[in-house]
Image (cartoon, rainbow, N blue to C red):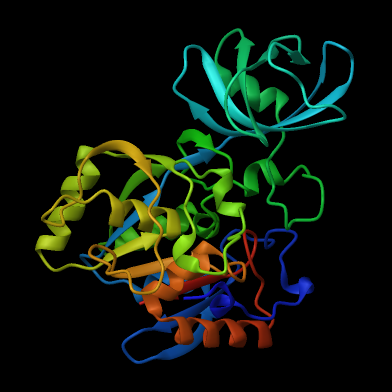
Amino acid sequence: MQLSDFSFDLPDELIAQHPHQQRDGSRLMILDRGALSVSVGRFADLSQFFQAGDLLVVNDTRVIPARLLGHKESGGRIEVFLSRQVPLPGTVWQCLMRSSKTPRPGTRLFFDDNLRGVVLEGDQPPHRLIRFEFEGDFYQTLDRVGQVPLPPYIKRSPDEDDPERYQTVFGANPGAVAAPTAGLHFTRKTFDELQRIGVEIHALTLHVGLGTFLPVRVENVLEHRMHAEHFQVSHETAAAVNQARSEGRRIFALGTTTTRVLEYALDANGRLRAGEGASDLFIYPGFEFRMVDALITNFHLPQSTLLMLVSAFAGRDFVLNAYRQAVAEQFRFFSYGDCMLIL
C-alpha cells in the first residue's frame, strides 16, 4: 500500500478559506456503500438519512486558543503553538516555537502580565516543553491571551468570526488544538431534528492534536506511525453504545476522531470500554470496523491519514471517485468546507 495510492488532484481554489455564511448551509455528498451510489444534497437535510433508534456519537472536545505571541527575557519575539499537555508537575505543554534563536532550557517567556512560561529540559526538536505560570484558570487565561489555531491550509489570519465558527456548538471539554471539523456543520436545530425522530445522541472526548496536520512522510503507508491523542469515554456513553450494538441499531460516528475512539476503546468482546487513555490507532484499508456503521466527515487532504480512514470505511476506489466528482462539482474542501455522509 503506497502513499501515492491516496492521491487526487485538488485545485487550490476549492480549499475553503472561510466558513459558509450559515453553519448548516454546506452541501452534503452521500455515499451509499451498499448500492455504490453517490448523490448530492444539503447538510440541512441530514436528518432524512436517520431513523428512529439510530445512535449518533459526537466528539465534545473544545478547541483552545493555542497560538501565543510573546517575548523572551532578552526582548526577542517568540511565537508558541501549544501541541498537547504532558503529565508533569504544574501546567506543562509540549509546544512548537518560532523565534530568531531557539530558546535554551531555563529561558523565561512572557505573554502578558498573567501568563509567563519557562522552557524545560526534555523532548525532541522541533518540540519543546514549557511550564506555564499564571493565576486563576489556565483555559480562561488562554481565552484572553491566545489566538485561534487555524489550520495551515487556511492562508489568512484569524478574524472576528473564527473564535466562534472554528468551534462546534457542543464543544464542552477544552484541550484540542484543532477542531473535529465534521461537527462544525451542526446547529442546535440539527440536534433537535434528530432527537425529534428518535435518534439517541451521546458524546465522548478526543483532544485533537497537531498530528492531524502532519503529512505522511513514508511511501510505504504501513510504516507510518500515528501521534497519540488523549480520549475519554463516559460510562453513560459506553453503556448506550453497547446497548445499541447488542440490539442491532445503527451507530453513526460524527467525524474521524470519534471513529478512532469507537474502534480503539474496545474490549476483547468488541464492547466499548468506559475510561480514558491515549489512542494512536491508524486506520487504513483492510481495517475491520467493529462498531461504526455510518460516518459523517469532511473532505480531506490528499495522501492524509484521514483520507486513508475514509477509504478503509468505504473502499479506496469508491471514495476517490467520489472525491473526483466533488472536485468536478466544485465542492469546498477541508475544515471550513462541505460535508460527506457515508452509509
